Structures are given as structure tokens and as C-alpha cells.
Image 1 (cartoon, rainbow, N blue to C red):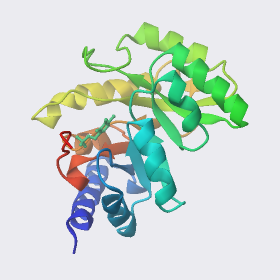
Image 2 (cartoon, rainbow, N blue to C red; image 1 turned 180 degrees about the horizontal axis):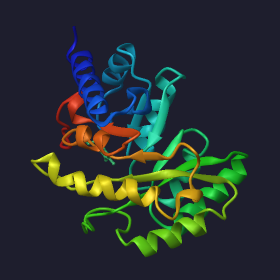
Image 3 (cartoon, helix red, strand yellow; image 1 turned 45 degrees about the vertical axis):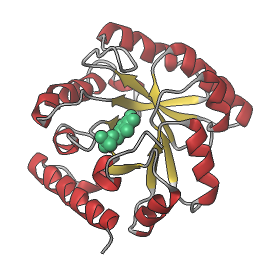
Image 4 (cartoon, protein in one colour; image 1 turned 90 degrees about the vertical axis):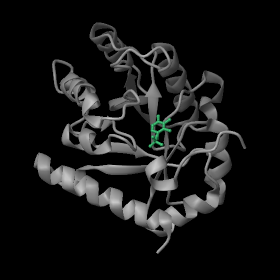
Length: 231
Ligand SMILES: *Cc1c(COP(=O)(O)O)cnc(C)c1O
């Protein structure tokens, strides 16, 4: 059995166990294979092992991989997005996880209108308020953003996303996952669809995120191994 298939099996087992601990149904949790920097051969291997959801953080890499891989792959844009690149992915990715400003939401709305589609998006929140990350951690600011975004007709706000700090003990991030969940299910609940998407949890902390209600976990290293940014 290949390494990627083994990793996927292990991660799915961990997700299932986390669901049992939390009294959740594992079918509520989507495992996004974060394949940035990895060659298409590795994505193909994950696909053959059953993976259908893939996430990339750069538009150029995403649009290069898309046409050479199976058509039934469901693509997720998870990285910071520049407005001039939106048109290359609108209507082609299932979900843009990384909307962090009204300016970006409006630009996506405009491109989606041109493309004749409604683009599903998530609002990215920076709950730990790390300077290196995108989005705001301020509840009032995020509430205002949600109200403004809800007025745009060619994007659909499906939920929230967060990139938690890099920690050695995943328990340290539980507080952020709980905050993201509670924010979505608080006074702004009516701005989200019946099935709220909570995109949270990465290789180091996805099990804790699932316990706290993640519907989508984004796992890269745990599936494909360490990334090499020098090549
Ligand atoms: C790279 C990345 C991930 C995956 O990180 P791993 O620690 O390798 O699992 C998840 N989310 C975002 C936004 C990323 O950029």
C-alpha cells in the first residue's frame, strides 16, 4: 500500500474517532487534501485512493493542475487571493475559503456576475490576531463584513474559515475553533445557510477542530509529507 493511501486511511480513522468522541456523524466532515507545492502525480495517487476534495493556495498552481487531473475533482481555493487573479478561478472552484475583506468580496461578486454564476465563499477570521495571517479577529468588524457581504448577489456566504496558530500542542487551538463555531451559531446565524461550513483544522490539530465542529479540515503535510519550498 502506498504512503499516501496509508496516510489518508490514518487521518480518516482519526476523524472518525474525533466524531465519535463529539457525538457527530463522520459524513459531516470533508477532508480537503492540501496539495500545494506537490506534483500532480501525488494528487493522482490521492485521487486513486478515493480523495475528491483538493485545496491549493496559489491561483497559478491551481489553474495549472486543474486541466491535467480528473474532472470530478472538487477544488478549494484556500490561500490569500489577489483581485486580479479572481477571474481565473471564479466558477471553477467549489469554494473560496479566504475572503478577508469587503473589497475582495465585491471583486469576486463582480467576476461571478460576469461569469454568470454564484460563487460560494467563506469569511476568513484571524482569531489569534497573528500579524502573519489574513482576516480580522475582531467580532464587530467581522459582523459588519458579514452584513455587507450578504448584500452581494453573486456570492454566497457559506460559513467561516480560520488558520489557527502553529502550535505543538493542538489543545492550545481548541479555544479558536470553539470561537469560530460560536461566532457562526450566534447572532449572525441567519446570514449562513442551513448547513454552515466551518473550515478549520490542519495537519497538527484537525482532530481537535472536528471535536469543536469543523465541517471541512485542510490537511497537507499529514497526507503528502513535508513541503519543499526551495524547488
Ligand atoms: C498549507 C495550508 C494548510 C495545510 O497545512 P498542513 O499543516 O500542511 O496540513 C491548510 N490551510 C491553509 C490555508 C494552508 O495554506
